[in-house]
Length: 112
Image (cartoon, rainbow, N blue to C red; front, side, top):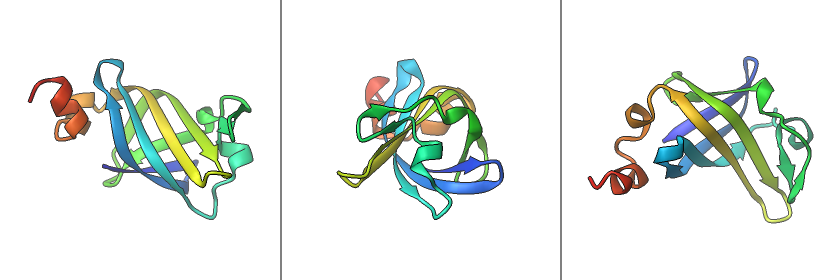
């Protein structure tokens, strides 16, 4: 599943979900930044160093524009490894099942 990450109305990144923790309501996605992305403003962690909770200024939507409501949005940025990802923690809306029923991790967890 592809998601888009915004600060206000500006898209700062897109990300492809690759891992889930269904009982915790957590999804992890590989992040592809746009030109509007600024690691110092948007990332919680840069090269392993914690800089603060920055997710309060961010919003996440599905590719079709549906807002994903979660307790925490955390961007981890490792420029020396050329790796970036976003964690969506405590997803409450839409339901985790509605979002990820077809994802292999979800199906494996629920024995489907």
